[in-house]
Length: 328
Image 1 (cartoon, one colour):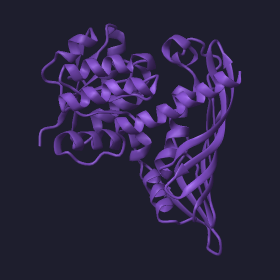
Image 2 (image 1 turned 120 degrees about the vertical axis):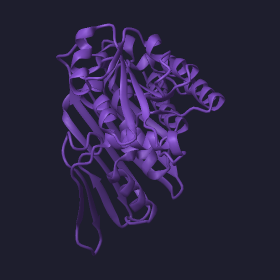
Image 3 (image 1 turned 180 degrees about the vertical axis):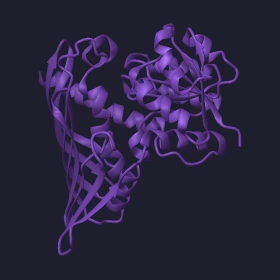
Image 4 (image 1 turned 135 degrees about the vertical axis):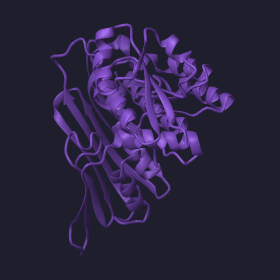
């Protein structure tokens, strides 16, 4: 079967270090084009993909007839605009998270997806990782009984990088847009629950949130449970997710940047049973995300994260900011 031919809009460091390489190495994918006006930024991409065609504008890449799909790693506030342009140009789209700055903006993406018949989704790679698929299975099977509480924590420290787009309000910065997507979305995806009550504490610098503690209640198929989710760009790096049930507990030690932050491990603790650890070494979640995308495009295979899923997480983010405004 013909490979899906990919173009990348922008020579970001994340694209260079992770996603462009994943596209290049994924089965069923071929990295054929990059859009950047800076030849120096293109050279590291050409080092591992010598035949790469370099376009000097995003529009030029989108008009390239050989390209089937585009990956969009642009700053957050540009994701909707260029996703719509790519769909209009006849390309399938994988856009970085958050795919939009407001949940309502995703309506236009859903409409464009449905009108074109093309596939478009957010690059939410964790749902492709077997550790998360295993956790979702354990919860659904009742391995720890009914969920009573869940915790998610994700932090790093970039205080010395003032020009980083995550520290700038004009590029959609902040810890919640950047990593709240993981903390909130992972709880939603694993449990099928949605937030029904929120309390919020947020610290800001230069107009962006640098620390956020969100707590409240979520309601899912098995009822209501409490939750807490912390994100920060000013704390020592930490990643952890815990689900506490009536009869046991599940803990993920590297839930988001698996293999980079640490080895992906799922710890299972249950009453009257030996503690159990499942390890997932060597899993490259960016690569398997690309491969799943290509199978969806070529074969119509099931895909675990839709625009509607992304919209649900963005609605939770919107609700967090709305609570912040009313409580300030």
